Amino acid sequence: MCGFSGDDFYHGGSLYPNPKEASLFLSVGHQAGFYYPLPKRSRVSVPFDFSGEWFVQKPKTTIESLPDECLFEILRRLPVGQDRSQCASVSKRWLMLLSNISKNEICINESAKNEKEGDDEGYGDEGYLSRTLEGKKATDVRLASIAVNTACRGGLGKLSIRGNNKSECRVTDLGLKAIGCGCPSLKSLSLWNLASIGDAGLIDIAAGCQQLERLDLINCPAISDKALVTVAMKCPNLAELSIESCPNIGNEGLQAIGKLCHNLRSISINGCSGVGDQGIGGLLSATSSVLTKVHLESLMVSDVSLAVIGHYGISVTDLVLNCLPNVTERGFWTMSNGRALQKLKSLTIGSCRGVTDVGLEAIGKGCPNVRYFQLRKCPFLSDNGLVSFAKAASSIENLQLEECHRVTQFGFFGLLFTCGAKLKVLTLASCYGIKDMNLKLPEVFPCVSLVSLSICNCPGFGNAILAVLGKLCPQLQNVELNGLEEITDAGLLPLLESSKAGLVKVNLRGCKNVTDKVVSSIANLHGSTLDVLNLDGCNKIGDASLKAIASNCHVLSDLDVSRCAITDAGIAALARGNLHNLKILSLACCALVSNKSVPALKKMGRTFAGLNILACNRISSSAVIKLMEHLRTCDILS
Image 1 (tube, helix red, strand yellow):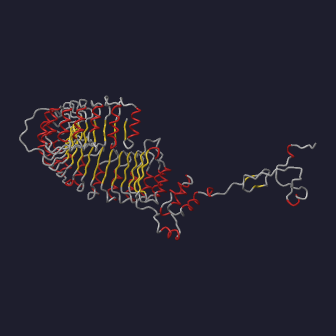
Image 2 (cartoon, rainbow, N blue to C red):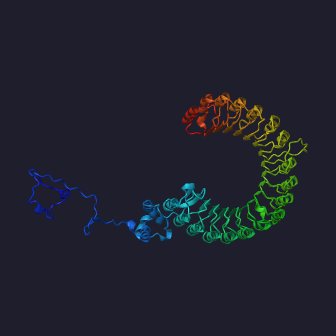
Image 3 (cartoon, rainbow, N blue to C red):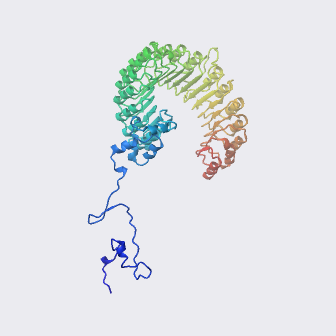
């Protein structure tokens, strides 16, 4: 026996350094009595260092081992286009380096430039593309990717970033820096609910995106006047600016915008505690020749700001003044007597205790060309002020009153008599001062211009007022009576039957005492023009109404009979009608509609875009599934 220990075995490789010497002693033919297995090939194809006790593998030398400065020099020599996009996908490090290369830092040799002259690829200056990031999708990496990949596709023109809260939003100043470097064509930027964004990010945007025309800063508490001043200096083309809930933005930033942004056409400031009369005055006085839209809301400004508007607002066409607690009657009077608001077409005033009868009459005289006027939550306004305003502002076409509780039915009808020649749209919402009573009105010309009437949640509105409206407004086309539980067929029928132009939209939502008689009258008289009919909550409406609609309303496109007393028979009658234009049908909470209506719904649903069968408990889930399979192009709520 031969005594071999475990360490004496041969593990492969040549016994002699010279193969020729080995062949003198051993033959490799079949006659050999020994078997030597072939040595295994090494899995590592890198040189080894034999100087040490153990074999040491030397690490590879790759481009990743280069410092950022060297890699930056390499990447900036890549042409804009597919090459840069592919390199950006190598790693996060490469993406962030590429995204921080500005247009001026890109270095391309002459031959590469000549090759690109005939191509569509290039650094996009047009700004065709639009991107929106929301919630968890809003990250610095995504912004960097946008900055790199949109350059060769027309350039980024519009960017909107919407955060939800501090924990979810992962956008920082680094992401905005990438946009500033890679998107010089950016014209519109909207930042919403971004507590992590500060001055540095917006300053980088201003430095790199000097074509910026629109900027929205909504709930960005870390952005201050410093960034806004830089925007004013770097972005002279800024035309629209909206600032909301940014407590660190104040007078200095607005004054800089007014002084340097000579193309500013629209300004909206809401809930910024640092903004006062100095900021508003400096902004408006410097942009008086171009500023057309002004929106001031929830600010601690005084009568001085309104006086500035009345003196410098020579180009203002749209004015919104909401929740200005320090503004008094004198402020509105001074604004109106400034005589600058001659071009004003749209005026909205809400939650301003300074709106009194005297102030509103002055507004009517100082703004004679107002066509759209909305008043909200003005507790000191009465009938006298409303009628006086209507007499002075004879151009009113659209008037909306909401929560003006001192306005009564006398002011309501006085308004109709005064504006009867031009008033087209009248809306009353939650005005509790209007009470139903029989009125003896003088013989007057009817309000022939009124085509749209909307009365919502005014509990005092009843049959007597509706009967008078029927005589005064023969050209009504759109009628909305929401939540008027006191009205019945006796009041509605005269109003509906008096329309000579033909009703197009009728909304009787929540009118619980309306019956099939009214719907049958609407279908018979206005079936050829009726486009939208809403009967939601009219629980006395049944199958008779659906039969009248099926027979007469051939152009109807939207029908809502939710919470009505309709049954399967009514749905079947509707399916037999010639309603080829019907796109939306709402049957929510119709307890008497069951699986028997599914065949009728399948037949009608071929043209549907939307079907609402929420809380129709007698329609089973299996029937709903079959309905969805049959109506693949229809959105079904169940």
